[in-house]
Length: 59
Image 1: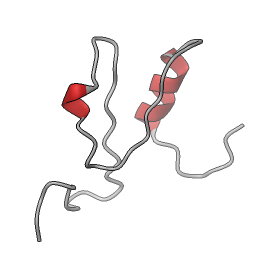
Image 2 (image 1 turned 180 degrees about the horizontal axis):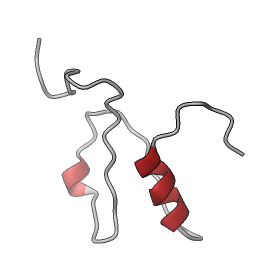
Image 3 (image 1 turned 60 degrees about the vertical axis):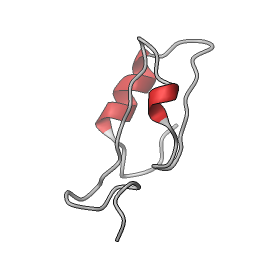
C-alpha cells in the first residue's frame, strides 16, 4: 500500500513491470550504475526540481 503523495511515475512503472525475484536497488548518486545495469534494467533519476546538482558535480 502506497501512502505518500510523491510517487515517481517511472518508479511505479518499473515496479509494475517487475515480477517475483526482481531486484530493486535504491541508492544515492554515488552508486556506479554502469556496472550494475542489465538488458532489462531501468535507471530512474530522482531530481524533483530541475537544475539541482548531481552527485558528480563539485561545488
